[in-house]
Image 1 (cartoon, rainbow, N blue to C red):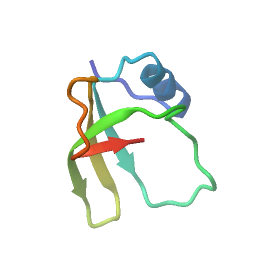
Image 2: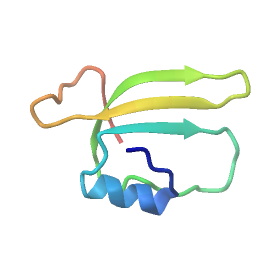
Image 3: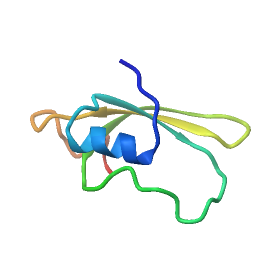
Amino acid sequence: MIVYGGANFVSNLIAYGLIEELFLLVNPVAIGRGLRIFQERTDFELVASTAYSNGIIIYQFRQQTKKESVLTNSVVC
């Protein structure tokens, strides 16, 4: 299932462990402090990233289970 939503919606999905894969689009526009989507530390593995000439970067993360979590290629957000 694919869902689109703001920081609060995505934050709740992460908090309840409902995210298996996350595509995070980073747009280089300053909007102050921004909105937090991670309320606590969560282990995600960086699967891929793609940078575009307009400055946008798309990161693909996969949720790690406790057994899969390793120090290499692990991103703690």
